[in-house]
Image 1 (cartoon, helix red, strand yellow):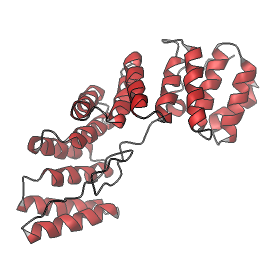
Image 2 (cartoon, one colour; image 1 turned 180 degrees about the vertical axis):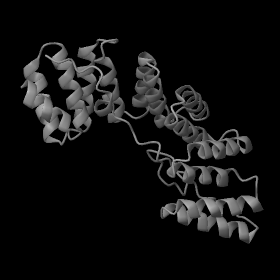
Image 3 (spheres, one colour; image 1 turned 180 degrees about the horizontal axis):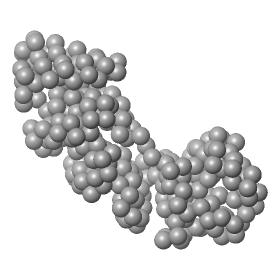
Image 4 (cartoon, one colour; image 1 turned 30 degrees about the vertical axis):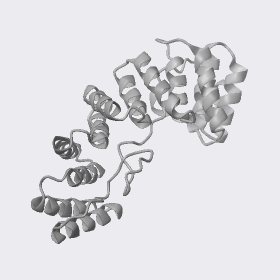
Length: 260
């Protein structure tokens, strides 16, 4: 019997928060993207460059967007939203240091800019600065205690530094805010079946909760199957892996062939 306790890549579900979506009205989606400048601006040239930059960013012309946001900053260097949006476009080009620099400038102008802290945390995690990411997510949470994705991402970062119980606490908080947060349930399941935590029955419970919410989500079946394997229930493990395989999970297909 093989113990699948370190199969992090395929088992730990991650929201792709390093690539935020667009926002024009301030509504927070699963990620935080560019924010449309809603204030009236007297300088028409500033408004022209801002609007054109925003459109370019939406269309995927990140270099063009950066150029126009830079032009807007030459006219008004104290606009936090422009720095934020330019940072977002830099992130899409994987210029994480440039992205962090722009978010930092936005925060200097507006210290309560929760989305800038949040996205700066994402960029720091891309650079494997997990403690820096945790600090930024924590600041975003201090500003907005209902920021479910900040709790979720902070949990991801805590996993990276092996703070498993801290990660569980953050995922649990995300679930309290959003009881249908399937990825948070799944990640708790993944942690609980790890040897250092060794709570396979807890892993089964949380995977089952994720499946109840989204029966077509393959990873909870994978995690629940491994937890069942760990307690010696190979029939249950194989049943779950077959289901995960039917949903397109290639790893479980291999396990079924080898173990079932």
